[in-house]
Amino acid sequence: MPGHPPEIEGYWVAFRAGSGVPEEDYDADWMCLDVLAGIKRATCMPARDHTVKGLQKPVVGGHVVLLDGQGAPRAVWRTTEVREGPLNSVDDAFAWDEGEGDRSRAVWLDNHLGYFAAQAAREGWEITPDLPCYFERFIIVWPPEAAD
Image (cartoon, rainbow, N blue to C red; front, side, top):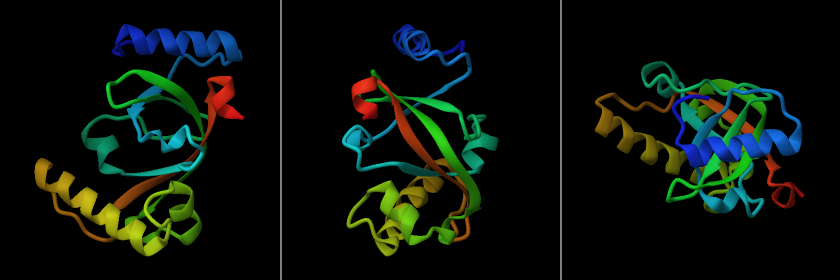
């Protein structure tokens, strides 16, 4: 996909060659490396990020190149589930799968309200508990040793 730095594009090309995935379209995103440890298997983002910022909407079967804190590609995940709903509709299972804090719904909701409130303050919009969000589950599919 045009627009990604050569290192990320090269990683994507290697993934496609090694996995046989024919799709050329993918996204790249920074994520905590708890994903590689197998703790984090879900993520949530405001739906407005996709409409206002032009980011790709998550789709089942879509791929994301996982970047570390320096922007280097570390893995590829494939989206297995997407649900659109209000932030406060998160359930216990999703909070557990996202793998943050004590993995409870209460801590998850508190953390996300705080994180999205800081984003809203920077970007000039208002946070509410019923903020429309995408809830996305995924599995690691590359590199092969991380997918085990």
